Image 1 (tube, rainbow, N blue to C red):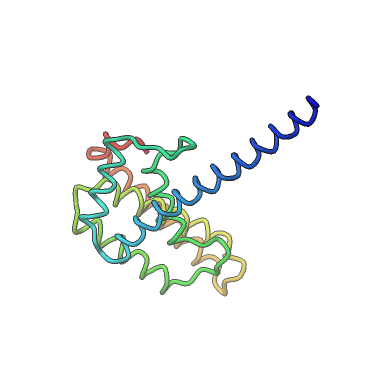
Image 2 (image 1 turned 90 degrees about the vertical axis):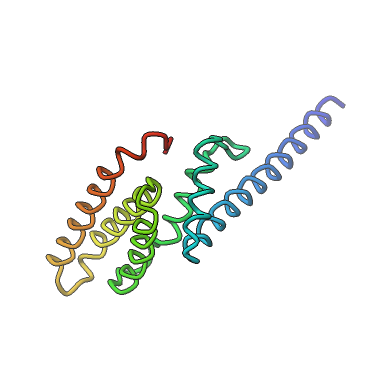
Length: 166
């Protein structure tokens, strides 16, 4: 009889774990979607308020992940796709919205950090696709330029990013 109780307890724990994992992933998706929607709709003030809320409160998901990190990574993952081939026009559109955020909210550490994260991802994608390019040397130069720009954004934000835990 005790073996049956143990098996039942294991099943209950397994189902409970699956339910909590599902709710964790749902919450992360909701956080990321909200951040992405604010950015894509150029509602930078609302995005900044959300970032500030997550920064000040240091809110976490049930598993302990920083909601601020989930927001940043959601945007980064939305704007980068490791399986797609590098397309300069598509990346220019992505950089334009990030630049607009940075320009409209010049004191935003988040804008600079996310823009740097996306530039680093683009650089990695370029380096990965250089063999597919007709001009691999030019692709390497673009990748190096993006890394240099990312570094510039991160250094530029040092003074204003001191309270950002990410």
